Length: 138
Image 1 (cartoon, rainbow, N blue to C red):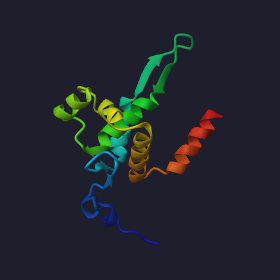
Image 2 (cartoon, rainbow, N blue to C red; image 1 turned 120 degrees about the horizontal axis):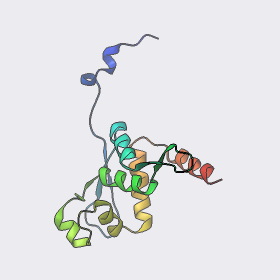
Image 3 (cartoon, rainbow, N blue to C red; image 1 turned 90 degrees about the vertical axis):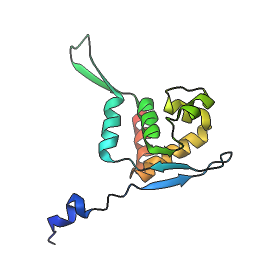
């Protein structure tokens, strides 16, 4: 089956940012989230990764902070409310901490549901991620 390279050119591909409303009890308006692109996710991974020299082996070691990655991902994907809004941050007592605002606003289950919705919208297979986490634990 032949393909046409024209089908893959940027100007011929729908570049609409995919969004979704997520409604939680207690909030008058829904949270609006957007899908993360591969570039955005890659940049977030870099921000959540630290590098150091292991003193015993003298090898460079990279470690990813999964909690930081989740916080960055949530902050980047939530477009409503604006987690960087000064009034919102003051209201929740989390100045210059968009992820902290979100954590104060939502209970643990809502935070998890919002994270799952972001991952799903961004094209991640939630079941595969859960299976991967379980395998890593064992």
